[in-house]
Length: 209
Image 1 (cartoon, rainbow, N blue to C red):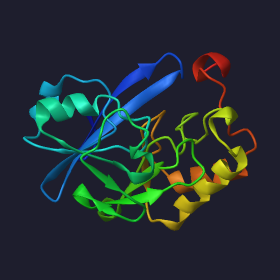
Image 2: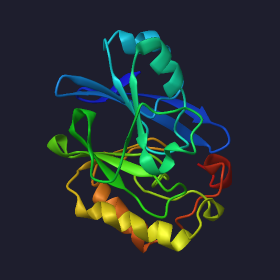
Image 3: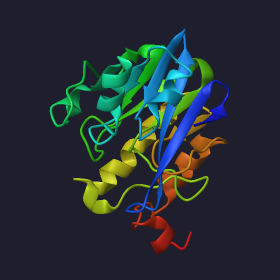
Image 4: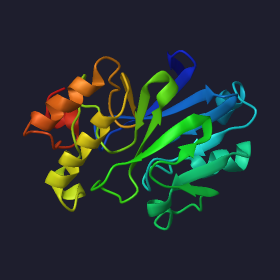
């Protein structure tokens, strides 16, 4: 676990299948500790920072070790209402587009993703956007999408990312790939202009990075 920004901690697990890191985040806002999309970690490291926490999942595929943390840590799990019925675990609470979640994180539904409930989380006070699978941080400093077969309508999935430009943020912390800490909105605009946005996996092997 490392501090990626002031008061925001991250840890990662490398996916051989994808060729990039799956990352999780933990932050404190309004005296609350929030964990986003937790991958495998020694839970003792979390307990060293926080006594209790809420877990926010951004989509149905990011359950990861949320249930384990809930069992060991007495955490409350929040998940998108549109994805909750397709998850192995049962979330304690569900949320919808526009809801304000623990830590004053605003839920932003990204339509036409690989799951109906795909959601980004905006920390308006600090202008930080947390992104699940809506876009992947790859290559470094840029954004891409997962392979086309992951989406019912790949072009609509791409165009839906334009929604994020309506919001005020200057850092994008991604749960898949490499976060974009400088000019992420410019990276989104470049993404929308590119034709080669769909990745071939694993990226390090297929793209020589």
